[in-house]
Image (cartoon, rainbow, N blue to C red; front, side, top):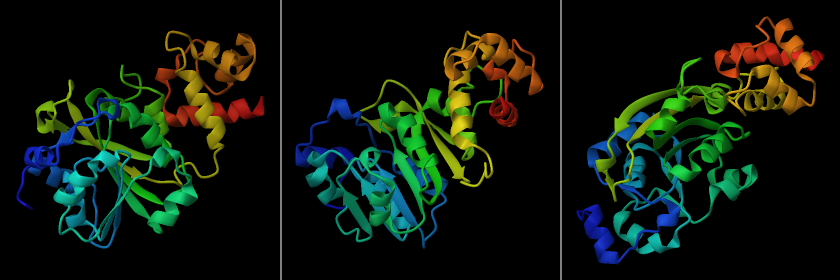
Length: 278
């Protein structure tokens, strides 16, 4: 049974894919090993996996880590996991939705610092990444399989077409890099788009001393309407007139007609300081 392929396991258990959950399982064994390696997991570390799926990635993480806590919402996968994880003794599958759990509830399950690894359903990519980056949880890193266009946004350069609020949100809590591109043909069933693996080294002290809530609001407002100038967006978000917003921008050292996508994280920090004085 341990040598059954993914398709054989799914057939043997009569599993039916739930389209609403965005289920696309990884079938390529070399890719599974590569993702586990990209995560940086050490033998003495804990992996928190989001989306157990058919357990193919879970099994590889179990070889790399001391313990794997894997969260899954689809209980129809129980018979599949009984086959795919047979003989693996350092994995605990928890049928709960991480996005609905409080920090203390997650810590009661994990109990120590951990690395997040996930083959994410595309519809929860951004909420899931931000759930961990903006929390007080002791997350060491996130290694996530995401849609290629999302991966490009996560690592985008200032002023590029892909540069967005999510780019800066990630920079506020760590450093992201794409570790590999992944063809849609490596999944079963194959999705309609290609993917990429993104690794984020988390640094929760990256903005020590800064007003993070103000900075987050500022960044979100700057990209709220991309065709509008930064002054227009700030005026709407912070309830001020455009002239006042332009004045704050000028005092921070920028042209009053500048757009949000032209500012780096350090620029936004400088702008937040001026905004706080206003």
